[in-house]
Image 1 (cartoon, rainbow, N blue to C red):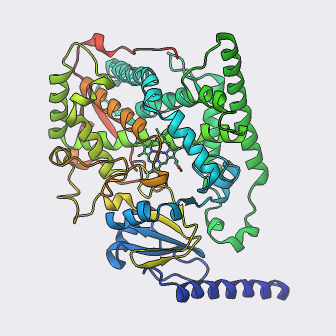
Image 2 (cartoon, rainbow, N blue to C red; image 1 turned 180 degrees about the vertical axis):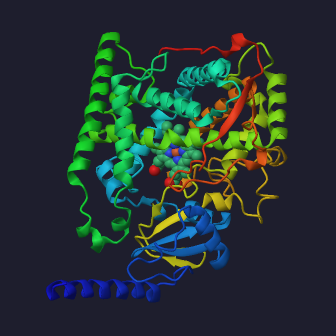
Length: 510
Ligand code: HEM
């Protein structure tokens, strides 16, 4: 290598090594695995990160330092420290770390998910709390959820009745994914892109292609992400990102325009988020970038999380026939064999609600939540957390802490009949939706949809493992990633258990 290149590189390396040393000497940082120069602990982290961090917490304690390149990440793994992060130091730890791709997608935090805590965030969050996720709006969007859940039941029933499928198991995720997709596109964009024959229209295909392309772009350049001085070797594909953004905006604007014209014709706004945001644009001074960003945030945060939660719950129910039968007994007693479940019945189905909660305890779909970033120096567990560090709460580990939970690895929904534990951010032992300022705004919507999907799946069908597979052979390991899919998608046999006229979709047009 030419001498003129070696010198600056050596200087950068020296600077980074000194910087890490300075941080470690100046601050009393939490303990953790020894970092390597430049890469920190990047090469020591196992792919399923929350499991790896939980193992390290066993060795080093409930608050640990992990270096992603030269950036300090602090992970806390018990409920006491989760409270320190999400309650006592909530505001100082409410910024977000934006990767380069997240920064591009969100136009540097013009949305909600990737915005730092500040006036913009407070304004947009207010729109969510006071306008988008009010109990009234959730209730008025209920027919959409019930339409989609009954469409799922109809589609499973048809597949069971098809002689070609005799003796074959179903890929459960296929049905759950369709509910999540249709529900979120109708809620956010006021559109069902799929017709009753299951055929997706052109806009829907474009929508899917944009989501897939976003995932592809987001997954690239992982290493250069953490080592800023390496970035010159991995330039961000500026053009690809610009194209992606333009394509996303084009589709969203076309849909927004369709709704504006429909409102002008009918004189009234519908309940979905596009109409809500467009009619509130002036009141809250929302830019077009913010509206588009918010709509896509809902897709990113609200689509996979619900389908994943139900898939894990179903895997537990196939593995635990006792729990499945008990939930079905409750459904038979309360709903009977002459009608189908609606969300209005939830309050009379306490065991079903406990099943959903127990699944979210053992399998939170975002086990490390989303990373928070410190906007000031704070102390957690007696250690220094310098401004600019990322802070993660391992909610997966917190919900399996044997000092807090009896037989934590057992799937036993009854634990919540014995002790009612809140899961929406008030009890720091159970945090599938996070807590504090950045708690998931879609928590109630997510809980309703998960409970409704589970209730219908259990009321309408008996679920058993595929032929020749024993319940204990179902693979319960996780795929790596920010959201945790099952590594082996669940396959199960469904046997109808209600009169056949109850398997019809209850379609609504809204
Ligand atoms: C079972 C379903 C769901 C789970 C387990 C879940 C969980 C979470 C978690 C853990 C966070 C991060 C909290 C933090 O950073 O402290 C989050 C954020 C968020 N969720 Fe959910 N979520 C679910 C469903 C939904 C739905 C259905 C929507 C919307 C339609 C939604 C919208 C959001 C948004 C916009 C954020 C970002 C909030 C912010 O940064 O201030 N989520 N969610």
